Length: 124
Image (cartoon, rainbow, N blue to C red):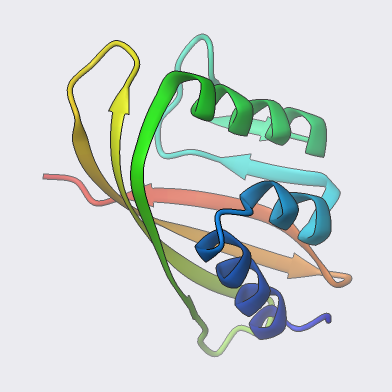
């Protein structure tokens, strides 16, 4: 598995099965870069390295109750090294109100692994 389409298809399938940790372990480069649309002191917008990304994911699960999540894609275009996935989530932050979120992840692939993920949010 090395093309963006193949990797994207596998990532979506694993996320739909609730296995996002397996997706990270199988598909992400050790030197992955993750960029969020927003950051904070406890969770910076840009993180590098698989261990930092695993920590970010653990922080998310520790700080949110996830009622449901749907994953759609991969969307592919003329670039052979990228795909996009749409996520829709119904979550309650541990210290907040229940909310619905929609975001897209733009994934860049090289050498058969996800090298970068960048998340953009539906605002407004």
